[in-house]
Length: 289
Image (cartoon, rainbow, N blue to C red; front, side, top):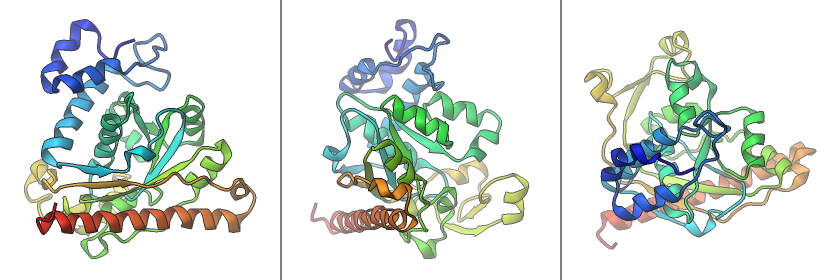
């Protein structure tokens, strides 16, 4: 089925340039019989989501990205990298970037921390955009269907990094390595620069976070002082670099030592890509690009 039924197409068409509208129209979802695909992705909401993501990607965060040749044109893969920015605009820009620079366009599906699905309406919204709770069964299903799966091995807490720890990677969990090894799919590392500066977090109200079942409750230079408007990120430029696919040693499933080595291999690749992004940002700031 087409991403948008004809009767609703005109609602999204004005939000995208003609070539992007054509790409949206070429993306197909398999209808499971309820107007969504088997994972609950709603074609109408997905179209609006990409239109919003495209505007933010091109005009607000002005994303510069390289290494698209490392993104698989077909088949399953894990895309893993750093996470930051208080609110997950980095995930939105990554998904938009992958959709925009793959041909045919591919939907990146993130494994989302389960606390999101405890928030009324938010879980349904994320699922409608093709994003899934981070369970092994969901990962298995997505890989079996040949999807690109996005993971942040640092976890949701990395979103709340204080300014003093900008671009310092938290320890990586080993789940992405185990799952990639078990399914024999590559890990494509990425490094993202810019999100660390979109909001400056000065405190974490942990008692309130625990009461609300959140990984953190941020106090930033603008939130909660300016209410909901304080959650609007600064229009910083994003730099995304994708690295060469990493093929995980199958022995990682049986050996703790091998698994630890493979996790560090991915983490080191992400760290190198972050440094590349920082260098490119300095070139932009110096006017040499």
